[in-house]
Length: 360
Image (cartoon, rainbow, N blue to C red; front, side, top):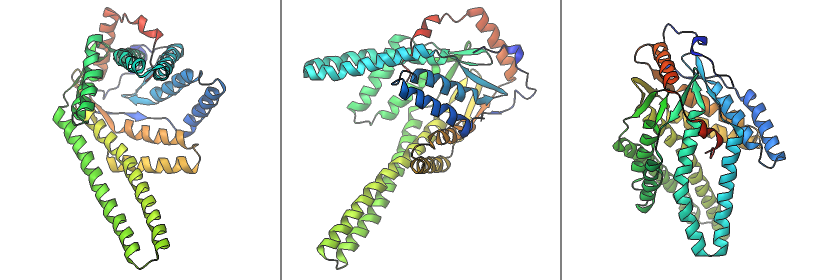
C-alpha cells in the first residue's frame, strides 16, 4: 500500500480544535470481506487466515479517521503466517511434553514463560511499525529486558495473590505499552494511576455482586415458593430444576453483560490519561449503551446462526471509535509537518521487524 505524503493531505483550518474520531465501515461491506476470508481460510485449512487478518485490519484502519485522514496498515501476511506457525508449534510441543512426563511438561511450561514476553514484545513492535497516519509510522521502543517484568512478573504476582493485584498488573502493562509507543519521533505518555484501576475494578465487582444478590434473591424466592406451595414431590422437583436452569442462565447472561461494562470503564480510563506529546485524548463511552449493543449483537448472532457476526463487529467498533476525541494542543497540521521532518532525519531502522509477527 502506498503511503501518502504529508503534502497530499489537505490542511484543516480547524486542526487546533477538538477532533472527533469517525468510523465509516459498514456491516454490508465488512460482511463481504468476512465471508470470503472465512471460506478461503476453511478451504486452505487455516493458512489463508494470515491474509484474512491483513484484509480485515486494513479495512478497519482505513475506515477509522481523525482530523480528515485515516490510518493505514502495512502488515505482511507472510510475517503473520510465520508467527502463527510458531504459536502452533509451541502449542503442539506443550501437549506432547505432558504426554512424555510431568517433568518434561513443567520444563516446557518454564521455557514458554521465558519466550512468551519476547514474542509479545516483537508483536507489539510489528503491529505499531506497520501502522501509519498521514504517511508517518508508529513505533515501539520497548527493550527486551523490561518486558519480563511487565508481561511475566506482574501477571505472575496477580495469580499468586488470587488476582488481588490484578489492577496493579493491568496498570503497569498499559503504562509500559503506552509510554514505549510513539508516533513518528513523539512518544505517548500515560498518567493513569494504580488507584484509578482499582476503582474501575471495584466498580465492576460491586455491579457484579449486586446482580448476583438480585438474581439469588429473586430466583431463590421463586424456588422456595414453588416447594412451599403444596406441590407434590415430582412437580416440586421439576419446578426446582427449571429454577436452577434459569438461575444458571441468568448468571451467565449477567457475566456476559459485565464484559462490555468493564471494557467501557477501562477504555475511558486508559485514553482519558493518555497523551501524544502535548496532545490529549478523551473517551466518552457509556456502559449502558455498550451493554445494549453487546446484548442485541448476541441475539442477532444467535438468530442468524452466526451470519450477523460481521454486522455486530462493526456496531461495536463504530461506537468505541466514535466515542474518542483528539484534543490538539495547537495546530495538528504543524505537528504532522514537524513529525515528517524528524522521521526523515532520523530514519526508522526497523526492517528486521517485517519478517515476524505473533499476530496477537
